[in-house]
Image (cartoon, rainbow, N blue to C red; front, side, top):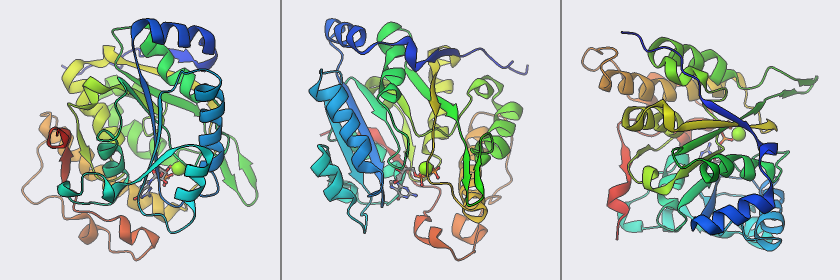
Length: 312
Ligand SMILES: Nc1nc2c(ncn2[C@@H]2O[C@H](COP(=O)(O)OP(=O)(O)O)[C@@H](O)[C@H]2O)c(=O)[nH]1
Ligand SMILES: [Mg+2]
């Protein structure tokens, strides 16, 4: 039987007040780690770290740890982040015994070795209009509702072009790949407004059960894996107003979609939703031989990093 599109509990960041969340968080004994994966984000990382530090750590102790995990930026990202008050790690320096497979997925995965919070909040490092409501809105539902385990952000996504901002035209890969794919294969997840959002909060216990693909597919793989493990009821989403970030040219989005699609198809096969013929998916680098700035992003798609090997 085809699963129907489900309702996912939906909040707005203004549903939560800082004072109330602080009080409840301490009463419940929760601890919060914020993790920001970066690669060449010197333009934006300073302001994001400062807002979290000043408004959520120094003014009150809502956030307990603020970590930047960097992929080897060639700009001043690590210096700027440290000066603004984050603890900064190079992904390859965390548990070097586990090897190094560069990409956002590695940073998120290894962040678990340097954080201890009972709730992890992930935030991309290229947000141009970050505000403290991002963090309140993502952890609020987990503090208010014990049955929830995973809270995804959503927002208006303008497309910023040299001709001005197109207010509704951002999030192209979500609209053209993720939403059609979820509609056809995982309709329960179709209710998520921004399935690729890099802003979400997860209970650590759940995170420890999830494999982490290395590249861009890490977040959507988690959505499918959490659905398989616990059902749609553990998800919530929160309106964070609007997000501006570095919009990518179309050809880079095309490569990103190719990498996403490999993970999506393999998960769909795993979940018994389709059957791929043997060797149907070539390695990404063979499938997408265009030479671009993304070349260094390419990873063998088969590699999955699993948390349990992080345990000391
Ligand atoms: N592209 C890329 N981003 C990385 C890497 N490691 C960490 N990041 C960070 O992951 C976040 C999301 O990446 P971004 O390029 O903005 O993805 P997009 O928003 O989907 O276009 C940003 O904060 C990046 O700096 C990496 O190896 N490659
Ligand atoms: Mg971005």
